[in-house]
Length: 308
Ligand SMILES: NC(=O)c1ccc[n+]([C@@H]2O[C@H](COP(=O)([O-])OP(=O)(O)OC[C@H]3O[C@@H](n4cnc5c(N)ncnc54)[C@H](OP(=O)(O)O)[C@@H]3O)[C@@H](O)[C@H]2O)c1
Image 1: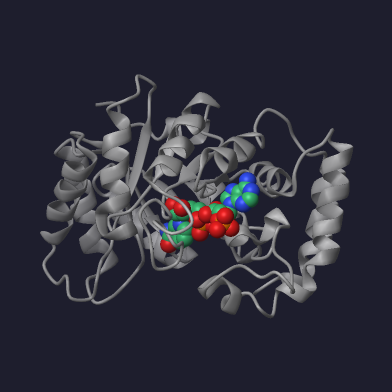
Image 2: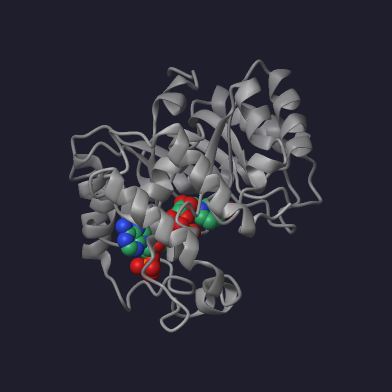
């Protein structure tokens, strides 16, 4: 198996599959169905988005099972990224390979392209999980390995531990979007570039806020409404600028501007999409670039949201 991480650097954008089967946050089975999700998968491939990001915990395995089903109906190449959750009660290092094998069963494939540690949760050390990830590569169960939600120092620990096995740390998947630029301001992004680690930007639309469809009077449903109640009143100036830039770019949507900004920053956004319409719209972030001035204007307008 080709184990180079080059394919990740060549991938401009992926599609996030958290909502594919998740009832708790995303209301799967209520406002959208399996058929909607299948539409998101199919249209993503058709429009050139070939990487799908999932996790064993999404919909308690349902996301992986759905992807496994969808894979049967396509000839298109699909890059599969999934994740291991190091729950604090998973005290045996063998848990990682066992979980990976379960993910492979649900996906119904022999190997994935990227296997990531979902969160840096103690008590098991970073080194121990990296040794297990290295084993997953040598056993041919994953092509490359990555981490998620790792700080710069945790990422460096992971990088060094894998280097002892001669295996590169392929990626660090962290929250990054116009309303949360910690990845950029902390120096994490610069360090990723220096070490050839792909920064995968999750929640790139700020869980839907950056599409512009949610306002103070029409907030997102459920947990998102509560989480973002303080941010919503501050959004209009940034959204107005995004709309203006979208018009100057020949009619791009706010979501497309948000995703293109992340691509211009040298990261790979993985927007979630619940249906074909959203997936198709998001794929419209590919094939063009914001100007440097537009990126700067967006940087400036987003300063008000910066978390250090
Ligand atoms: N590693 C981690 O810890 C971690 C954490 C979070 C996410 N992730 C990954 O990142 C992926 C994306 O993050 P996310 O799902 O949290 O948030 P997101 O991509 O910022 O937002 C996705 C949501 O925005 C809405 N939306 C998407 N495209 C749209 C469009 N074109 N027009 C209008 N609305 C649109 C949909 O919800 P509504 O229609 O309901 O608004 C969709 O579910 C996840 O699927 C997952 O793979 C990873």
